[in-house]
Image (cartoon, rainbow, N blue to C red):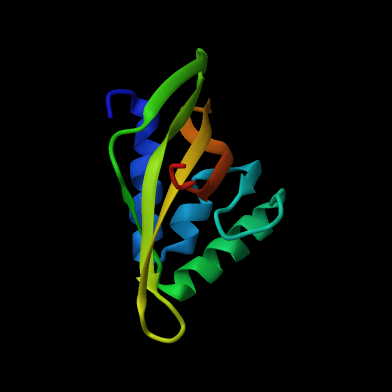
Length: 128
């Protein structure tokens, strides 16, 4: 990950896999928006971002980056990080699952720290 903004993605994966809701929520700007992989709606409030990831943490889901993100500079202090990742974990019945997904994070440098201002994650479509 050549761009220093990509460090926020590393921190996000680390917090996600540790089930650390505070660490994950702390990476988002207060006015961030989130289209979560398992949410049918757009999350627009900080407390809803926290609630979304609390449910994910409770499920013990894990995430793994497939490879380094594509980094697209959109301004001096703003980038888009996009790529593929894979979620895995136990289903309620005990069997395990793997779900390939894709992501886009819009990350902005706010007061010297990279923060997520928008995230879109969705299941990866199967080739036709």
